[in-house]
Image (cartoon, rainbow, N blue to C red; front, side, top):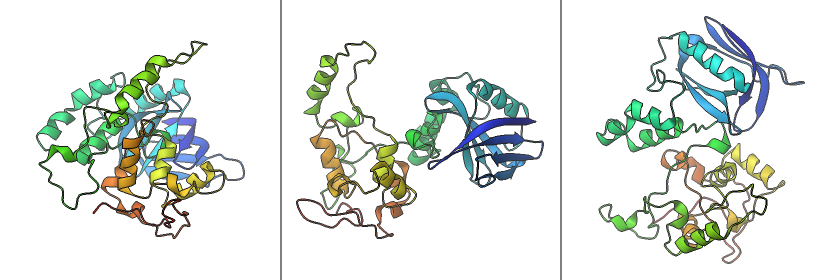
Length: 306
């Protein structure tokens, strides 16, 4: 049915190969020299539950496949081929394709997809949880666990990391959701505005901006997941073969929030693991993460709030 060159994208590598879809199976054949067949896979076509449009390197050229066994994989194609492949798969009208996104038009904007899916209405009426709603918003936005540069984003919710008891009826314990993370401290509003207004690129190529970095990128994902492989290795590779200095690592909730309050340049939001995978907070591999400069404290597990 389909046979085309492609790239298999994961959080740790990009594998050149070929995607083939027959009337019974989905195949990927690894064509990497010296490593051929290492990443080959084969799944029953009947397992396919959803195919979603994705970007790769800012180009609308990828598709993400979701299977019945909870497997998913991201495949990048020649930009001109993606539409043909997607439309061909949709034309098969597979019985397992029952996702809320499966029957939506390829030409729809993310805003249109959200409206047509009625996810917000389902969230408001508590048919889906906060977590599921945010994950679906990330999916509609094209975010994926398979690409660290497009990793799912979850927001900071609390701003009180010192109290022994939290009163969830007190609005003062929550961050201000009407403002981006970079101006949670009102003192930063003027700094950010001045940065935007004073910036001038003599070449005219770069537009004005409020923030010099993004609230989510590959480095920030590694920052949070530094205690878990393969993110430990990825972090070390990013830092030229060693761990970053201890004071810059994620070591406590309180210090992470204080960094946001202290600097308008600290704009990292959170990742989904904060809400379902507590293991990433534990240094179970006993990595030598160094010592904090002022306290001389050895970094180990992430320090939790009271």
